[in-house]
Image 1 (spheres, rainbow, N blue to C red):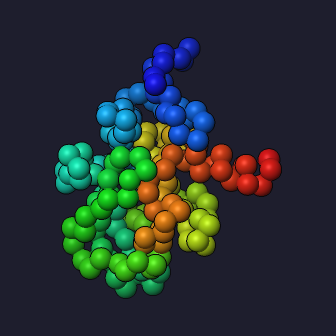
Image 2 (image 1 turned 60 degrees about the vertical axis):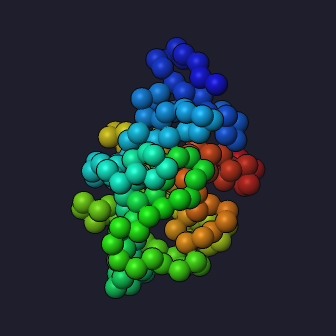
Length: 166
């Protein structure tokens, strides 16, 4: 499952082909891949002390499109999981689309693409250098069955390339 590459330790993740992540940013445990770091575009850590499934979660602020409602949320750091906890505020309903912000600076996270459901797919980073190649993403429509779980940005980008025949 993992190998040593020519450029140092790299974790090869068997998802949609071969995904490469720095070994110190993703832990493989029990057939799952768990993020150990997460950052907003300004470099603030998104890792929370609140645990989900025994792992420190990733914290965001969800707002409605008008910025009138705000909910403090922690999501699972496990790739392809969509477990979350609401820390403060009211949970958004299934089908609603949210804007995703950093809880420290309130900066909106970058949008990687548009999901098949039509909602933005948000991106966050697992290194302070903000490499898109090492990003992770999720759909901003609550309950989207296609993409509401955490996904590697490489996986999402590969799907876009395959879909459009590049």
